[in-house]
Image (cartoon, rainbow, N blue to C red; front, side, top):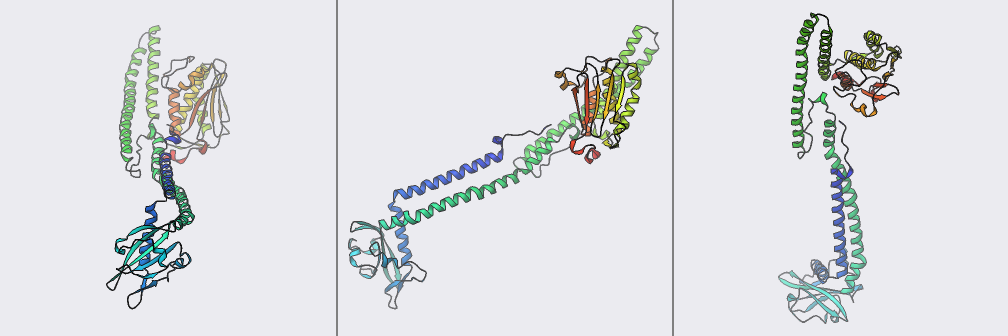
Length: 469
């Protein structure tokens, strides 16, 4: 049974990777849209939040003298306190006591003049305008020795927008791009190799299933290494194999038993007919019995060749077996006035791994079939080389449309001299399959040619696995 090839669109790996790429693409799109929305909206909430966070950060760095009064900020960690001197128009801070008295400031009082005169404890996050500029500000309480001080920090809207749009957002955009590339390629590679590792047991199970044939129905798929989601399917397949093997064994046993049981009655019938007075009826009955006996023998032989344990493989000289088969059928060929010509058989010294008896049966059936279809005065030629054996006759052959049926059970050609059982070529094909050989038939113009060859990779002999069959 050939291994079924699936299209890439039906691949689980492709579908999972496609879903992964789609998810990554959607995530990147949403992140980019959110970033664009933040840039274009100039959200007051965002700016106010930034100012409040900066205010609380400065409050944690406020320094005091021995009397507990604010004196400045700890700039040992490079907290950019210098910006208050350089950007005094855009940014500023001041420290108030509980009565809203200014005890420390980075700017003059005019900077804070628009701020309402209210207790600093009531001023959390707020905004005010100074010289036409919108200022964002926030207040953070600081407790020192039981005294509460209030730090107020303010920054202009245009400075915040400059920092965001000129510095923060470009870096954020670069970060989004870098994150997207890492997500797409690094995690994509991980997903690809993970899928390959996860689906490897499925590929192995599929190959094992494809290798199962009527001669290896005892084989079972290993369900221990497959994913748990697929294990029930493998178990069901093994159960189906058990039922199939049982049915096949019963069929083969019935075929062999029936053929064996028919041999004795046919022999008795033949003996009784031979005791009759010679006449046309007696001759007709003997022909019928002979035909039935041949069918029974062929059925029994077919049952035997279908069982792998009936074979004993060894190194066999094909040329010698060809000569033996030709000698065995020489009287049949003489009676049909057909010559048997052997070429190359004496030069074939390289042995094939085969069951000698089965190989003899195969060659005998091919030669017998060729003799039955060869016209009087023609030849049946057997050409034997190291990697191929060809049996050809010069008869009428078969139609091209009939070639696919030539190895079918009980199929018979229209130009045979006898009334065969139609199982000879089927037996040949069974023997060839058991050995791993290839047996094909093709029109020879005129006549028909059968070509027998071992596997290409193991030519001219079979691999050792056949020996353990």
